[in-house]
Amino acid sequence: MGLASAPDACGGAAVSRLSRRQFLRIAAATGAGAGIGVPLLSGISGSSSTGVVLTSRLRLPAPFQVPLSIPPVLSPTRSDATGDHYEMTQRRARVEILPGVNTPIWGYDGIFPGPTIHARRGRTVTVHHRNDLPVPVVVHLHGSRTPHGSDGYPTDLIVPPGWQRPPPTPMLPADPHANVVVGHRDYVYPMTQQAATLWYHDHRMGFTGASVWRGLAGFFLIHDDTEQALPLPGGDRDLPIMLTDRAFDADGTLRYPSLEPDLYDTPGVHDPYSSGVLGDVILVNGRPWPYAEVVGARHRLRILNASNARRYRLTLDPPPPGGGGLVQIGSDGGLLERPIAHDAIDIAEAERFDIVIDFGRYRPGQNVVLRNAFGGGGTANVMRFQVTRRVRDDSHIPANLATIEPVPLSGATTTRHFLFQNRGGAMGWQINGQPFEPTVVNAATRLGDTEVWTLIADFHHPIHLHLVQFQILSRGLNGPGPHDHGWKDVIDLRPAEEATIVTRFIGYPGRYVFHCHNLEHEDMAMMGNFTAS
Ligand code: C2O
Ligand code: CU
Image (tube, rainbow, N blue to C red; front, side):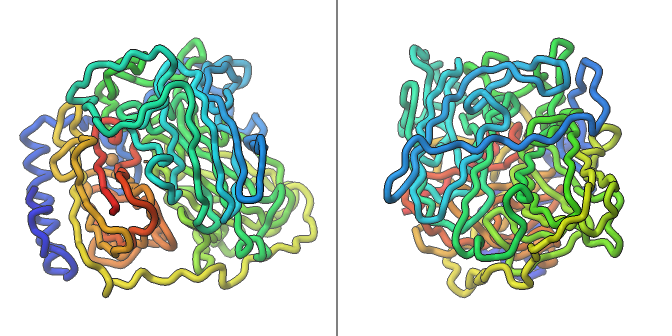
């Protein structure tokens, strides 16, 4: 643990270079020595994703034939003065994803994506989850500040009735603190945070990749008065956009290279896919390369990359006259301070970008393709917007969206270093040379403390912290990149990159995880614990 044992290796440029040299030495040593399980990397230069494409075994539809659909909004089963109660059942279903093809999925209420929950800041949300699936499940509300007991800790399972717990193995270690329930559980979310685009998804230790791939993911949007007072596009011009990639077998089932398709006691995937599973079909809200008719006016797109391992570079084709067609107004944790006009948006796994596209900058009748410059062939397309008539547009993007106080570095009490690295083998994705172990505390934080974390990656690793939102201080020797602004809960680390983040551990005491959000890396142990007390 060369880096972790150098507590003074933080801050200045000279020390950063030392860290990088140490890192390169470590990377070279493991790469040469261990025969590491990373056979293919589609673009180590920061251009693409760490993963291997699984190809479909049936004829894929032409792009832009299927209309975009918006996941249904879940209604509360009851509401009282302080909050709203919801119910969801996780179950098997058969759905039509590719036209005319029947695909079995696992879905929240039997649909993919799951139903969208609209929450309000200050009103507690309680979601009663029932598990009718044949395997244990765990629900995590990604991006939320949630008490430990409802955060979806990876061993806090909802097991199906009659479930026989498998004996612990190194890949599926025992957890004496696990809170396991049978059949159903209430997740309680205090909703003390600002308006933001969150999502919920499965988080079972060792099997998250396979479960999310089968369909366990949905939107959870928080609204508040401050955001609602802004003249941003709303109503049917506020679109949740979930990006996933998938591969299909000849019979229409989803292909996924699980070592054990029953997902009982053996996590992980077959080589060569252990570096990440990529599909050859791009789904938007569960539909392949859809199209959407849009009026010539501003639209808000809440873009979520819910893919297991794929990164996207989103562009508009053609760009609007004058460029800057993707105006970012929000990041993972809510609104930015000021809008940022981008020509391209790089979005890693689990990240959210709230953007506004003004289709009034295009001619009525024009087609505008949302492309993925990191893809090739079919995966270079995402969806198509078909601009209909021009309409009066009362929305606009204010120059000031929100106030974001920089976390004061002077208050930082602790600096930690984490190296995200492949060391070969079935649990080869490790943090500081250790695979995930529920009983090991990798960082003991104190509630209210400010900490600076230096994160170093060998390959692409989108690093996510539960409980908190953070700010990105640096990438390499420079400041934050163009896509690093605002409150973040995921940082997109690229190969051989070092970055620094700062956060205050505000919230609730208990045990939380931080991990790589490449779900294959996560399942094959690139996860750690931090405690807050
Ligand atoms: Cu979106 Cu711990 O995950
Ligand atoms: Cu990773």
